[in-house]
Length: 378
Image (cartoon, rainbow, N blue to C red; front, top):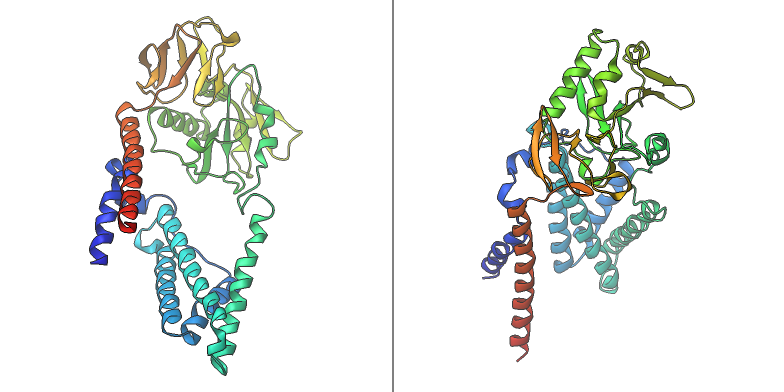
């Protein structure tokens, strides 16, 4: 009966994931990204093993059962994190890490419960159980190592200062970054073994961290970079300008730097820790017919001075959701007949409605839970 009730609750909760649950490809979700492979250090493995095994061996029936189920969850999570050969990708790795952490948490609770019941146990079992308690305290206390600095183990935002040179206030340009420095979070595209990506300075926003499948603009940029790599280009800045690329940076050493040093319209800057080139050709991401550069503001572009602008061209992948105003496609980019002071990438109407419905359904479920508890108390 408890299993049936849990399954029913799960079914009722699924609409809370709208619109994701209606459009996600579960297979691609598990296979996407880099292959799953997590290789924890032996110190962490030893401590976690003590947390799981000690209460399983030393605890009474209840404590041992809880620790055992925690160990099963840990094992399943570890299997997921080491399943790259089976096609499991980045998101599968994250699922495995969450499961392993949850399992260790369950076992840690069992170990601490053993500590509360230690008076009923003696001999070697007591010693083993206390080892588990000590390991649990050590593991929980070790979280301060990553939490105390304030970033919870996430990379420091080094590039907020490093790319500050490109974050100008009078125009919006992008940085074409070659290399895969781990301090710059997110995914990259591949150019014959060389990683690259576009960055809106000073750092990528959350919506641009993980790159989507290549579209028209991405394919056009890849073609330009291939031509540069083949050595057939002498004015790379002129070809990169339509993509809103005002800067080129190499965060890893690459022989391709030589090709950019020979370009007539890219100026090498020598005062940085890595190779940086400035594009001499004007390269705004958004510009209107009057030649006015529109300033980027999150997912919007704002007319200079806040006044109404003429039709504006936006150097991003063509998509009819740009507005307000009449939209048209120019090659791979966008043209918006805007009479207002800004243009923005509009939300997907049906999916936004589904998200609102999910929020409303969440309120209904809370009301049902409250009503059920009130009825039981009666």
